[in-house]
Length: 289
Image 1 (spheres, rainbow, N blue to C red):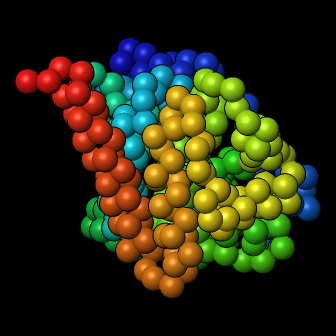
Image 2: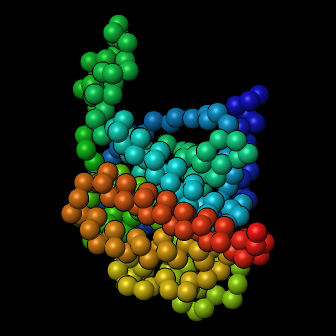
Image 3: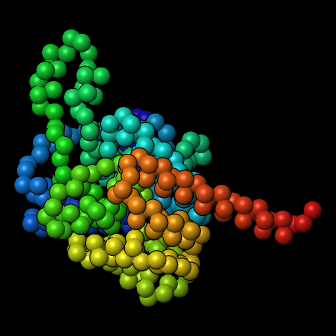
C-alpha cells in the first residue's frame, strides 16, 4: 500500500506540471536521437525505485529562497552520488522535488543513471557466494558517451556534442548545470508578471524540439555578460545566481568537475544568504525595535 500510494503521488505531481510535456532526447529524429548518437546499441534494464518520504513538485515553489535552499541540497546529493560512482544523467524539472513538511529536497528517477566503475561497485555490494559475479564483471558497461535527458535541461556541452555528432562524457558537472537550467525554466515559466519579449523568446527557444535552437540559446544564456539583468518576476531574486553562474561556466572545463560543482553549490548558498539577510533588513524597517 505504501509503495502504491507513494508512486501515485509522484505521478500526480508530474502530471500537474508542464515539465512532463517537455521534449525528451528520445523524441528526436533518429539521426539526432540519443540512442544512435554513438553508433552503438545499449542494453536497458527496467528498475523501479521506491523512495521513503514525499516531496513537492517545483510548480509549488513559493519563493527564490526555497529554490536556492533546495539547489544546495540537490547539488550536495549529486556530489554524494558522484563519490559513490553514480552519475544521474537525467536531472530535469520533474526529477527534482522540494522538501515536504519534514525532510530535505529530493532527487528522483535514477533510471538513466550510470556507474562510473561498475566492476568496482559490483565487487563492493555483491555477496561472496554470488554465482553470477564473474558474468556481471565481464558484462560491465564501459565509459559511454550517449546522451540522455530532457532537452531544455541537458548541459550545453552535451547538447553541442550531440548536435555536432561528437562524443562527450557525462560528468557530475553536467548534472549540476542541469539544475541551473531547471531554475531558469522555473523563473521564466512562473514569471507571473509582464514578461519582456526577450524572456518569452528565451523560454520558447529552450523548450524547442530543435537541438540547434536550444544549443544556440543556451550558449547565449551562458556567455553573454549581463544577460539576466532585471529578469524580474516571481523568482527575480534568482538573478544573482544566474549572473554568478556566468563566471563559473567560463572556467568549468579547466578544473575538476567536483570543484566546479562545489563552486555552484557555494554560489547558491551565498545568494540564499543574501536573500535571507535582505528579508531580515526589510522586516526591521517595517517593525523597528
